[in-house]
Length: 413
Image (cartoon, rainbow, N blue to C red; front, side, top):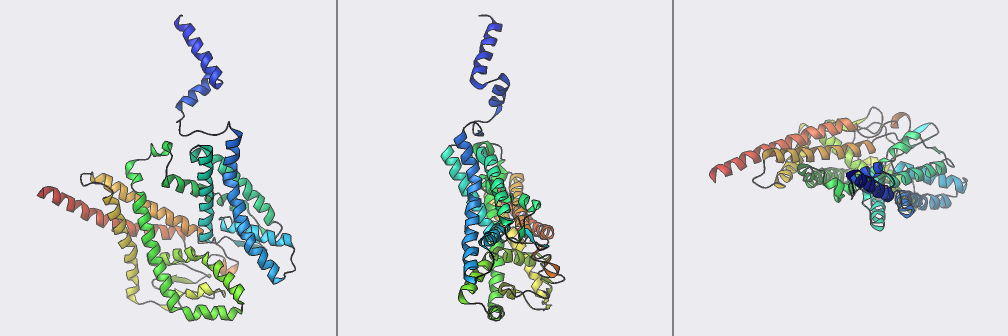
């Protein structure tokens, strides 16, 4: 057989197997672990349901709260109106927000948002295991299923007073995107793991340590305020005159915003501070919260006044956390590792913490009404930039000391 006849025979075999020589070339360059499940209908449905089912479960959870309250209060609104309110609540929880009577509401309960991310991540992992495919292979289908389900929820919300926005539907897609990123960070697919540099893969644990340290410091500050302002918080509950059941529901709803309070407390420790009402600020320098709505959780805010000068020592908290991040990052490398590798891991860990705080700050800030409540929370870019500088300072101090220490040990050896 001549060389030309062999080439024709090979092309015929390939064409019969995959349809065309060009597709065979594409298939040859595609990593085996990054297999798109377009061909199998069963896998397509699994991918779509991986994104749609969490939306349905989230809507159901909101209905389990809203519908009983609608039944207990004996409101004259229709059952469809209650379903519309529940759908609007889910849109807010998932980061979408909505408009009602000309008022925009976009302040996201971060704890509920984190629960939505967990639902999608769990559903995606389960679907990938059943389909025997990497999660990246199902990701486009899951994203499409989530988007389609969110459109259905938005249509249901029209039965109530809320009016979903196109921008809100787009921002709600941050839930499946975040779920996929966290899934890959936790257990990356082979296609991803082969392309991640070592210095980046070793930055995950130090970044988690940094987030835990910052969260612990913010939680401590909130608890101190709760103890010191307990009489004000309990007085607000009494002033509302709600019954035991309504007070319990109100407390549970406020707990959904606990991570928002932690981000606000972290903003105070970083320097920029936050605001609840227009013209009011809370920072290390002092507090002028302004006229606040009667929400018991807002009783934690300090009264008008100027803080003593030593309050600015709070800026050392992020710097100390930065030192810890640097220590964890350098410990991820052996003694013989190049200082550039340790510096790259340290910088990556600091950057990951700053990006995570930026996302949380954006979620925990937004509109909660009109006029005085047009903007509630922090300035995300200002907080992320201040935190990045303070963490970088602490990490650089540790990295410099660690480099000198290692060189001294090498000289002695």
